[in-house]
Image (cartoon, rainbow, N blue to C red; front, side):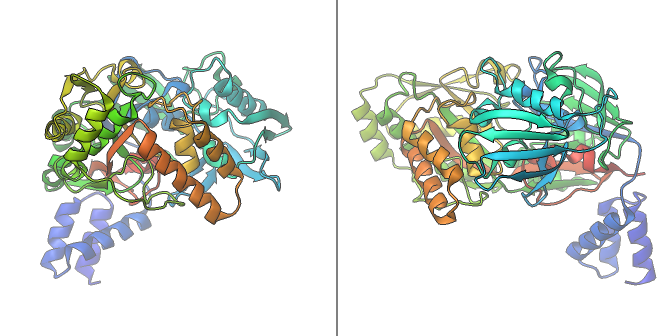
Length: 527
């Protein structure tokens, strides 16, 4: 590297030159854009995080009906906020493994029925209180009680007993579960003082920030937590603004009102990436856009009608016209190749003749009502319109009702019998199936009740033969595909965008969007 290129790299890495300017100047020196980007990333990492400043985010998904209680978190905004002020026992690593958070270590008995989590020594909540094993046990108890409304309840139903011994929290299960630590990484299971039983929405946890201003569905401000034990949280202040309108969210990024946005509309992602000083980051993973029907509610309790709807959807057209290349075709299961024990199944294709046959066999008459909104996933109303057109070719009438963005996750999703929605996915098949398809899961948003499926899921947790376990998950996937209320046309890439005001983005992080929801804690504001 010549001296001039070294000089330019140092200036860009320190924030004195934009990425675009650096790539252009490097190009004039004969360096390709790819090589220049790699050089800059290496230099930024070598320079290390910059401390201080205000990190501004504009996110989609928030609502005035949201709560700071992690048990009730249902959308991207809620997850981003939880990551600021709280932590679970364990968390995913960038490559999908596990690392300790509130727990510094964990181990299982030989039969995987008893797990011991050791609470990290000397860490405190943001109110200064030391974290104890009793806080952890009470947190698990709050989320697993029969009267809880926690989204993690389905993950915890197999717990037989929780007790403490010094700094150890010992969890006994009714059945062996080799994936229990992954379940404990669920974003609902934030460790709170006294388990959060007295004040579940107080936003007091062990995270790197303290909430200073809360205006549900509008704006949030967080400041550094002086008691934080870890190395996350480089900015002094984080401002999170809810911007549900796609055009307004992109405009806020391009005008410099915010530094990072999520859910860039695939239709405009290419255009956004060409804006000066803006980087669009696309991450493939387990996220999927869905149409969900309650299988215990007419007319969706009729499997012939469900099959008519499934064969009446043109998935490839939807991927082409809604995702614009930022994703892949779904197959009416929540599992894709992002999962470790994935098995490919025969792809269900659009077949209007077969859809018409199933519809006639169902005996249903009249239109089918579908509810949607932009808040359910980017391009959802367009996807609904495409579904309407593809069904029409089979003689099936789809009535579309567009719902308000605000309140969609409390009034429509998991309440109305047929609507558009999305799932960010989960680290393992067991966690995905347990969260949404186990009969007793509170987030069983398709009202799928199948005794054989439940028994196979529980048996798979204890199966140590990987080949047998893989086949069990494949069988469950086939059952969901043919009998479930999930119509999954596409797996979406997570598309986020940030400006040159920020440094520290890491490509390909496992989990949810925005580096598994940790962008605000891991990125920094350039000087």
